[in-house]
Length: 461
Image 1 (cartoon, rainbow, N blue to C red):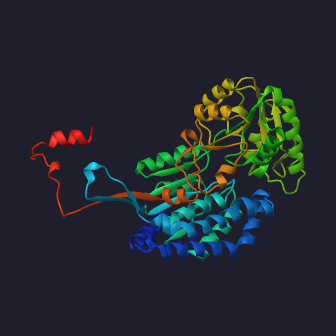
Image 2 (image 1 turned 180 degrees about the vertical axis):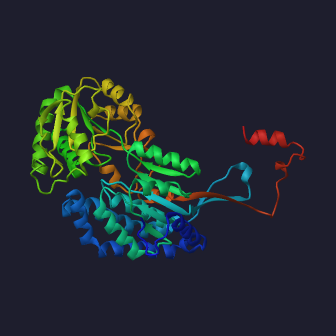
Image 3 (image 1 turned 90 degrees about the vertical axis):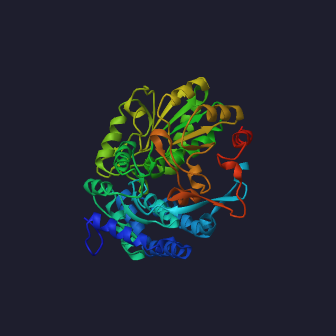
């Protein structure tokens, strides 16, 4: 069940990490920087093997594997090392009139021993990106890679074994039972990326120990293409964001709401872009496959719920599905209830912006929302009336590539955020410290001082 040579049980492994954390070794800047260096060097050592594993599990091309998984991590490590000293520095904060002679600051403490549960769609990036934050914050960590991408999981285990002792960071491979055993332990923090359904299970398990969590979930991320949008740009960017990784991206455009005056032109434009970038998918060697038969069968069942404008080709043997656009879909169809997480894109026309706002607001808050418009007033109305994790105006997905923006969901699409400094803060407890002077002592704070109530009311009115 466990990779470590000692063949420890999960409970023993957690206790081993707790003992190591108590030595205070993980807290120094020098230690954290050196561990990030070891991590990057180990990834570089196994980079070729990792690319091969991503191809075996998901049919990712070398370009896709590097740009969406490995290169992202290299950049995150480099940026974190450069900024970590500044992030760790205690943050001075101002007081009020009653804090004369006092100094206040926020110190960032590691939580302790943390659990990271990774998904299968970006099985390397979404395992290691939170780990970078955990290391930067001074924690020990157990990483559980997805069993649905076993080749990547095996390489990730090698990477972490080469870089770290299991008392500090370790990969635990296994299935659902392993995940349940991990969740039964008491952790100081849990970071989960995956479906909303499993997120509820993780949150419930964490609640048993009052463990804080970050839940990076999903949902149906809409795209609004207004009447004044640049259709050629919109079609190209939506096609790229939707069919990258065969739509198996948590912030991929899930469906498009298009102004009825632009529907016909948009459909032709996105058809052209889809074939230019990805071919017919099924016969395209470098197009990512669906992760397993269960997800493939779920996706093919959606094809009966509307009209195919283009695509719809499938190959169950290779688990490939063509980039597909569907129209004439009923609002209560399954494809409009479930997060699609595949290469199917419903396109739904609208007449008035009010219809769009009502349609989206009646559904759970999405992880992402994308708006294509040239109008600042349209942008203002959408941003004012709709709640979502994050998003873009006149683009898709790119908001999560900016490390200075927090990435996370809201409501059913998740809680908490990470990337860049926000990863460090996610895995750190913000500890409040106030230091008072002994050079003098203001008597007004004490109840036996004449006029205390009057002065306090004057200050705090």
